[in-house]
Length: 397
Image 1 (cartoon, rainbow, N blue to C red):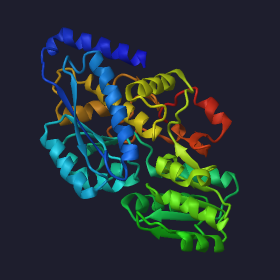
Image 2 (cartoon, rainbow, N blue to C red):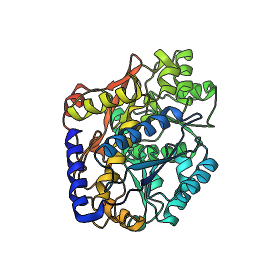
Image 3 (cartoon, rainbow, N blue to C red):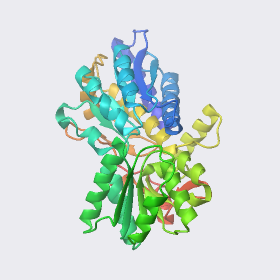
Image 4 (cartoon, rainbow, N blue to C red):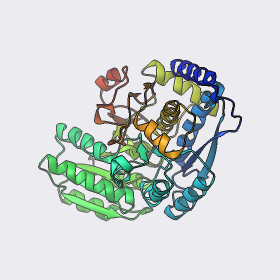
């Protein structure tokens, strides 16, 4: 962390000597996400990660002497509200936007950023279609969260290694669940497998006992859940009530409080893909966790991945900005700078050496994933070797 701040300070001083630091107005960055409502448990850590990074960046001079100013909009995890707030944040004359936690909310708003030619960096939403909606060379949509197209195969590889090949898939009917189901089915097909049972359900469902019984009767020996809210806990508690002792696996929402706190002991042993686990496994992560705890006066980050990825997204944006030598950070110039980031950013989740290119708008690759496991109400490494591997921060492959 100190190394990154020294690099930023040197860049600010160097560019200021070129006569570009005389501007005194702020440099506006939009932030959009669910800061109230059912998805605030990971929207708030996302916001906090951004705020922590901005505080650090402003402490060494901001962008060419201009403090970074956050224009924050709450999408309330609602697609229509997200669209309205996306339009509002663009109208606020921001240079770029960091945001979105919910795939369905993001999907409805992408055209706003593409049409305005304002770069959007997505630090949380993982639905695979988000970064493929527009042709990559033309796209203003970037992402540094692990898309489901790599999370699903990662989890499927793990469960096959464990001998769990009779998979029941439980996916909600939101945009997130729809896209996730397709990714899971594709990953299973790559292993010559098909799900023995597929359950679809609406977000907010309170009882899935009938679907769980059907999955058990179909011979499932693992439940792969793809839903973002309390429904994961509904599945776990339903299994417990039935006495059906099969593992539950999934993507990163199994690390959310909605699941861990909602299912309590029924959550123990659940496995999920992770890019970041809140353990001080190396100097960068230890520094980030300490700084976060100090700033927000908390010993526990509700969703550590959301905070860490958002923190990194802010620094990726900042490092890219310093590639704009004349200080004119308009949308096309910033898009080009993101695609050609000249300096390596030593991040919390990964080491970002050219995280994006003209033809690749996803910064996270499969080698950056580890398998997390719920244990005693927290997420830890499922495999000791992953904890050791995490001493070294991975680079894009």
